Amino acid sequence: MRLYPSPTSSVQDNHLLLFEFVGRMLGKAVYEGIVVEVPFAPFFLTHVLGHHYRSNYSSIDELPSLDPELYKNLTYIKHYEGDVADLELNFSFDEDVMGRLINHELVPGGKAISVTRENMIYYVHMMAHFRMHTQIKEQSNAFIRGFRSIINPDWLSLFSRAPELQCLISGDTAEIDMQDLRAHTQYYGGFHNNHRVIVWLWDILQNDFTAQEKGQFLKFVTSCSKPPLLGFTNLEPPFSIRCVEVSDDQDTGDTVGSVLRGFFTIHKKDPIGRLPTSSTCFNLLKLPNYQRKATLRDKLRYAICSNTGFELS
Image (cartoon, rainbow, N blue to C red; front, side):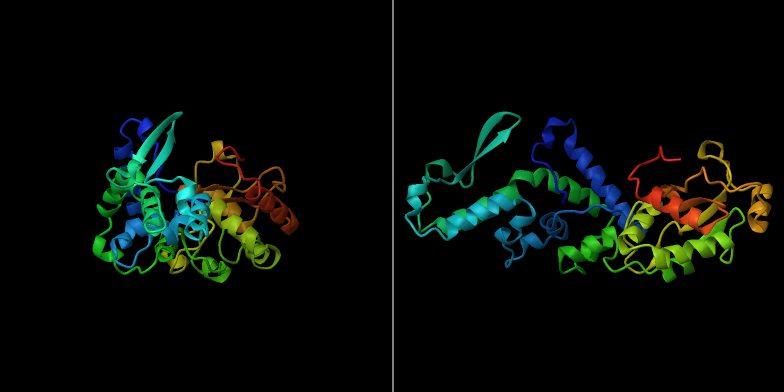
């Protein structure tokens, strides 16, 4: 699913202010280097970049990212071999808005202008332009206004295509480099890079998990399944792992006792009843000090594949 503003957003009070706020929030995330897994429709990112004002821009080329069915229908009209007048089309568009049918004219007086072979191409482009621009113009402008209040428009000129901006927003599409992630991980609660559980963890991630599971693990901890565009050295906050010995509602952070017990691995029993949890706001994995590698692998795989939220414990 690709995201773009809804043309019916006006049912919500102050909807334009909300779009501006969301744009400002996304701009803040981009400015701070925080990756967010928000898959925008390419045509909408083209709006954000301002490329739709270029002379060589064509609405019809990006229409499939918004409305594949309309694109299919317009392509059919474009290549129609019969008399286009037989289709009884005019330069207007009927929109169903919350059960009410509203007619929009693509050009002034469009309802009275029939589509013919002579103006067919113009009709196809005007229909695509209406669907992708006119219909959501106010919402798009509000979002862009908020986004550009944080991100300098001159910086956006560095991007030539929408996918490049998407990578900056949501991270790199390349395979996750576990060695890079490990090199930029911080440890708390007694864990350290050579701790038995930590050695097990990285070995499991590197050798036992599939590429999809690696993405699920990263999303479990950071809320985004893709790495930052320039590597994990740019992940903010830094990826962290903390040893925990109690349930989340009892967890008060590092204490002298928890650090010492984690460092020396002094435990009464294997915490097999506990699952790994995370604090995605801090990119923090909270990991019980398991006594067996198989337990760690099974619990971690169960946790990241459960597709659950804050209620997981």
